[in-house]
Length: 366
Image (cartoon, rainbow, N blue to C red; front, top):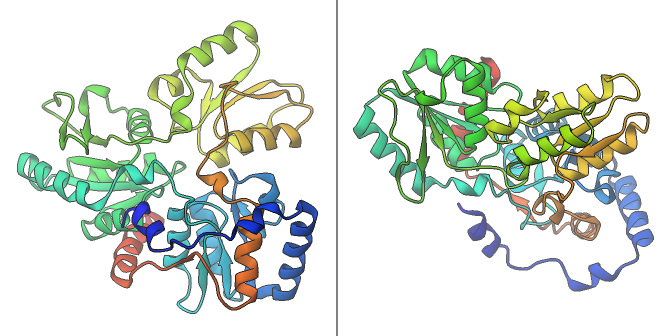
């Protein structure tokens, strides 16, 4: 189901008066409700979350890590996921039936995940099967909807993360001659290239035009879905050239959701975890330009005042969809839970959940 359809089925949004509450009052309310609910409440928060919500997190991490932590927490009756919709879906799929996963604002989606829907994928798969036969294994980034994960699961594929994409790609290419990589073309391209696969053996699939955009090489190996992260695609070679010119001693580290040109020109590239660990372990006084979401960059700068840290793109803003989860929405969702009338409940249909878990399980066992 598309995010717009999901939002339409939950049309009643947060009451207007929450927007005008005093911040100090809302902070006290969150603390009081957390204390009252105790172990029955678990609040995981993604690294990209804004500080006003991040401060209340019981666990922080990337999307899959948080879903796994929620799955391991059997005491919590309510899991209030401070992230985006696909993350809450994964948490719902991995937790117990009696646990309720809540997304404080149902509008908190992911533009990348929304770039691949099931109708488009079914059309693409039919076309590609006619052209290449049974030679393709689908893989999907965990930054995708439950329906896309389910499709991949029932066709023998697996999910990937930015940390393990190369390893899963290597596994997939041992199963079939070709891989269809969804929905982020940049992570797929960068991961395949790191394995030694030339760009000439990669082609882009356009879901809007329902065709391969570039003439594929006769030995095509990687079919890249034409999707991207709206944040990471805004880092450019010009940004890198400017840093090299203005501060040549600055080290540049970027996320693999950035374009191939940016990843190639940077000093380092890796997952959010890799970026955090690299900055944390770096010697004092080393200078860094980071190509990832702005809330995380600002937080790293605050945590490491001995290391000058800036965004690779000086005009970058935080992830707008992630930042829909704010303090008023958190208070609203917690008050509704306390009133035994939760809103923003995430429920993945059983069949979709089962098939999507197959894709997740394959990844975790590789």
